[in-house]
Every structure is written in C-alpha cells, then in structure tokens.
Length: 539
Image (tube, rainbow, N blue to C red; front, side, top):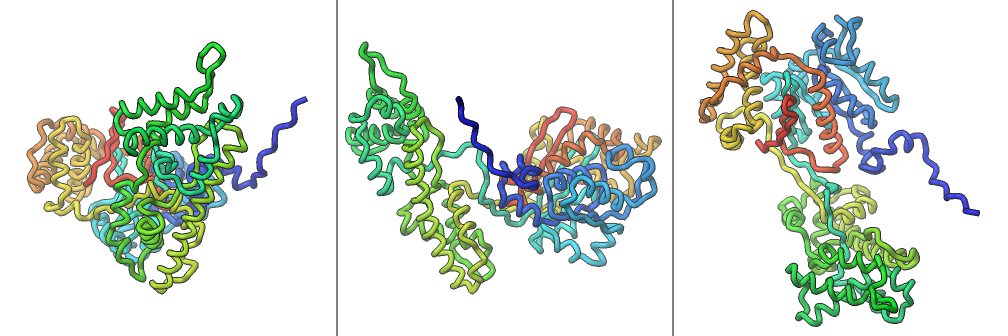
C-alpha cells in the first residue's frame, strides 16, 4: 500500500492570498511592496487601472490627487465610474471603489487641482515612494519633474491618447539586487574548485562504483574528473572552441558503462554532464557589468550618506580583491540533476556552506564600513548581505535622465529622436505627436479635434505646432500628414482597452521600483494599439 503524500507546509491567509506573486518576488519583495506609498495624479481611466494593478497585489497605501468631478467621458473610459457617479468627486469615488478590491490596502485622496496643490505645497509630493502622473500638461509636468528629481523620488508620467499609450520613467539612480535575468549560468567553480569541493570530488573513484551508483552520481563529478584529465592533456587550459568542447564531450562519453554486448548503458547523469559542457566549463570571473558597478565612484568613495547597496558593494569589492582572489562570493545553489538524493544533498551542502562562509566575510566587512561611516550597525542586516551575495552576478544600476530636460531644445534626447525618425516604422513618431499635442494644448487650451466642427482647422494648427517643434530640434518635417490627421480624429479621447493595457504595464514598473527587483524600463515606453507594437527609447 502506498504511503500518503507528505503534507505541504501550512500557509497562513496572507500567504494563500498572495501565493503566485510571492513566487516572483518573495517575502522580502512583498514586504517592500506593503511598505510603499504611491501617489496618483488624476484618476482617469488609466490612472485607476494603474492603481488597480497595485492594489490587488497589496501595495501599502495610495493617495489620489484629482480636483475634477466625474463626467460622461469618464463613464465611457473608466470602468470604475458609472452614470450615478456623474458630478461626484472623481478622486473620492475612485478611492472608495479601489479600496474594495483589497482590505489590506490603505488609501486616501486630495480633492484639489494638482497644479494648485503643487504651487501651494510642492513638498507634499516628496513623501511618496513613487509618483505616477496621468494626463498632466507641460505647465505642471516640468516643475514637478525637476522637484522630484532633486528629491530623488521616482516619477512615472503616462498618457493614453486614442490608440497611443506612453509612459516615461524618471529615476535618478535605481539599484537592483535581484534583476532576475532570463538566463543565468550556474556558479559551479569547476575550473577552480574550493578546497572542500575538491576534496569531495577526489574522494570518489568512478571505476569502483557499481552500475547503480555510477548512473546516479551527480553529473558534476564525472564532468569535473573528465575536465581534469582533458586539461592535463591540453596544457591546463579550459576548452574554448567548439572542437575543444566536443573533444571533452568525447572523453565523457567514453566513461559511460557498457553492457555485455558493448553497447552504452543509459546513464542520464553522464548525458547531463555532456550537455553541461557548454555552460559549466567556463572560467570563473566577475561579469563585466558587475565589475563596472564595483569600480563605480559611489562604491569606491563611500560617505556617511551612502546607501546600503553601495556599502555592501564596497564590501564585496574588498572580498573580490582579497579572500575571493578575483571571484565573487559563491552563489551557493545547484541546478537540478539526476542523482541519488543523499549524494546530491551532500554536494548541495558543500556549496551552501562555502556560500555562507563567503557571505559571513562580506558581512564582517560591512560592519567595519558602517562603523567607519558612523552609520548604525543595524542599517544592514546579515540577511541583506546574504541576499546581495547570492545575486552578486546579476546586480544592476540604472541612472536615468530628468524628464524636464527633454523640454530643452538642446537636450541630448533630440539626437535620439532625430535618428529614430529616419526609420519610417519607428514608434518615436508618436512621441513627436504627443509633444505636439502638449504644445497645442498650451496654446489653445483644448485638444486637437476635441470639438467636431474644429477638426479641419485643428489639423492645420497641430501641423504648425509639430513643425515648430521639429524646427527647434533641428529635425526635418514629417513626410506624411497621416499621423496628424489621426491625432485630430482622436479628439483627446481615452480608450479603456488602451488604458487597461498601459495600466498593467505601468503597474509592473511601479512594483519594480518599490521592490528593487527586476529592471525597470529606461526610459520611454510607447505603445501602438493599432499594430500592437511597443518600443522603448532612451531619451
């Protein structure tokens, strides 16, 4: 009779509720999310979609700043509004309905014009983790951008205009420990094994193992032993070319046991060793992008105001130069493999123990640095250091540009725009269109094509605004007027399907910023709903 399956660990209500996302960013990521406070400027269709994408996973708190009342247009583009809401405060209604989605989230609103609030109290916006602005004009956008840039508060400016969606992420410096790369090479150190690993490998004699043990030894063992033999025959170097790697694979194939008829026995672990030659037999080194971080001025020259990321990075740099002998702290994890459980756990424990020792060395150095910088000892925990060491090979630092600078005709972004416009299929043309709409609104206090009887005159006016803008940038005029006609046909309308898509995208970017995981876009995201194409531009 089969024994009952082991029970899964008991889950509390919170773990059950957020189970799927905890698999993405872990308990520490969820904790960071629940500590965040996001400000939304304007609860339009896209604004509420963004907050919906944050409220459902459990953002700590949100504040809506919006002085408008609900109109018929809101009812048509915002699923959170209905006919009975017309005439009521848009901020109040949106806040009430969003809070119904998740009782764990706190939310409030300020029923005031965002521009007036900023002019009267600009520091109001300095107390948030992230500020998200939807549908704001240049008059508010530029000073708000400069203020938040100085305060070091991330800003995301979004727009849903007809079939066009855009999002601009402004962040001064954003550090990422867990970037979650799509492909990451296992940290196995077979080219230069640490003492306990080498001792374990040398203690195993493959020739003395019976067939069962031989076919269930972790593939690292035969791979290591065959690599040693191959290096002895090839001057001690590692295989680099395809021909050299194929010759190593042939050495491994010869170690596969054969039956009484001379046919190779099916040994999955040896097949895994053959496949692993491509990624497991590489020189252990510090990745170039990590080396750049460790050589960054913020890492080398710490101050009393240095952030924890840079303090740990400095400790890791010292480790690489001393105890690590040119290598990062060991990651301490193993890929899955066909192996006897006891042997796999033994091997796994070797890597885990070495990683723990490396992290301990780094943590001691962190404590020394905190003391030198006159920062509290509890500024950085041992768990923080272990997390950093575990992901040291995939660190990332993003340094953005100030959005307000794009409104200066001498901005370096102009060169990127001009080069992108040379490609007739580039979505950068929509960026130009939206900037033209901003200019149009600043001059006429209305959106092009907003009134049916003004569509044709507005086409001429919008063309003039865009031509003037391109002239300031030193760019040639657009070859076709089709985009201008299309923009005027939109009449400033917001389509819920576009806002829903953009809301999900922007919500993800906010989560990346507050959790410090995954790389946020840098820096301008454009969406064409007609062709379902997206592009990211660094402006």
